[in-house]
Amino acid sequence: MAGGDTRYPILVDTDTLIAVANSSLWTHITDNVGLTTTNVCKQELERHAEETRETAPEGSRPYQLHHGSRAALAALADDDTPLTQVTSVPRPHGTDAGEESLRQEVVQNPETIDYVILMDAAGRRSIRRAVDDQDEDVRVVTPPFLFYILYDTDLISRREFCEACGELLEREGWTGYKAVKAAWEGIPIDCSDILDDNLLP
Image (cartoon, rainbow, N blue to C red; front, top):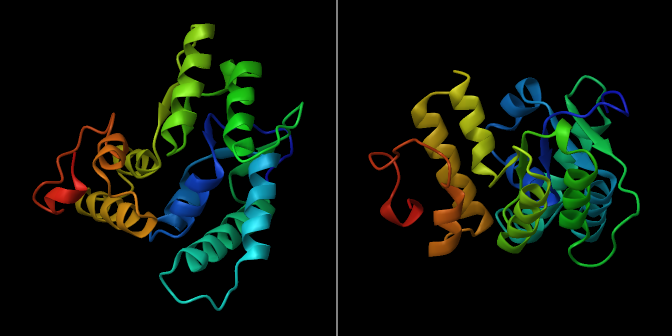
């Protein structure tokens, strides 16, 4: 883990780390994009890695949780990877603890954050309220935005971007109308010549 006190301006939750760690662009992200998560999200990753089996059927949810969590934890443990964790004080508990730890970080250290990335709609609303209350310029977006950052910095092509987004949405089961619409929010790229309509807003 790169320096314990390092805070990168992109704050990510457990589900985001799992989703992008399972993607074909994970090494692009870990080589080029500085991410910060919380100790609470790290503990959620550890729990997923322990409670799911490495031998789960490929493509199943337990398989995704296990392998995505393991890949994210390996990146956190690697001093050369720009993925760090910060400690949430007080430590949130419960089913939404990871998301709450991100909201807490936004409230306590808003000046260090440019983006907060998570898929859960209620979590995004809660964090946006915290951002608005502090009148800060922090964007709250969904996991495909990490691929957009790669595209926007000329690290991947438009086709690679579109295909990675489509794969992520299908693999994570984020294919309902609202989830797809949310996933593309704030991403100014037209993928209609590459992806099926059901994966587009």
